[in-house]
Image (cartoon, rainbow, N blue to C red; front, side):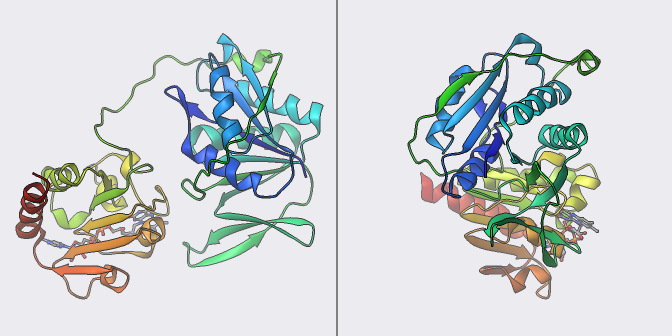
Length: 320
Ligand SMILES: Cc1cc2nc3c(=O)[nH]c(=O)nc-3n(C[C@H](O)[C@H](O)[C@H](O)COP(=O)(O)OP(=O)(O)OC[C@H]3O[C@@H](n4cnc5c(N)ncnc54)[C@H](O)[C@@H]3O)c2cc1C
């Protein structure tokens, strides 16, 4: 098996998701796990990929690859697969990775399995695990042909540093004319402080029980006091109360912090699947029969407007 892992990077660093997929690929126990690094001024990141299990990193470093657009990386990956014969290409899920993986599948006429939460070798075949029926069951999925392309749900694998060194190989960049048709006009970043929900050890998440967007300050204040990040349910994201980037669940992010505090969240299955692997789950809900109490480690039944400000004060007192 020869595996190529797409190494996504933003803001000058490799994404945790890609490193997690790389670490997983490295557990298959051969020396054939390689990385593909595509961008401008990215050569320096290759060493870090070596630490997480890449034996070799193909570096396509060119100013034409500066913008995070999908088609130029498809060109680079397609020629790497054709030239080196990789039979498996793996991606950590993101908007960009999904675009590149689907473009690559179309270009190479290859099979793509997405939203995977595990991968194993079984009787010589590669088998992916994929949640289905609104995450109530898992199905085993395979590929009929090579290369096998797979996208893994965000946060599925933890990056594991093994301390290796990657051989760096420079790639001659040859971007097709049709791949230059899209250009990046502007890139804007949402202002945020504190850790992102993918990286945070503590998440305080708010739901519709907050009653309105203005009450998210309660959640933000508690998150700040605990040194954590703010999460949200789809109900509040759909209502425009909080940004999609913070949505936890089936159609949002999968998170596994040490502590997850759910404030005014009912605990619908689609939310649960995104946070059930958290270390300790604390729920604050005025309805003692809310489903969240079925899987919370600690439950507080009461009005969040009374409980959350007191909790924030207590945390601040303890910390000072
Ligand atoms: C295909 C599909 C995908 C989905 N994907 C996602 C997803 O990714 N993430 C996600 O979160 N949801 C997702 N959903 C939606 C999901 O089914 C639920 O509708 C949603 O999670 C509910 O959000 P909520 O808990 O904020 O709201 P509600 O279900 O309305 O719950 C609000 C809770 O707040 C409590 N409450 C009210 N007032 C107070 C108070 N003053 N003090 C304390 N508690 C109070 C209530 O008792 C209630 O339990 C998806 C649904 C579908 C069909």
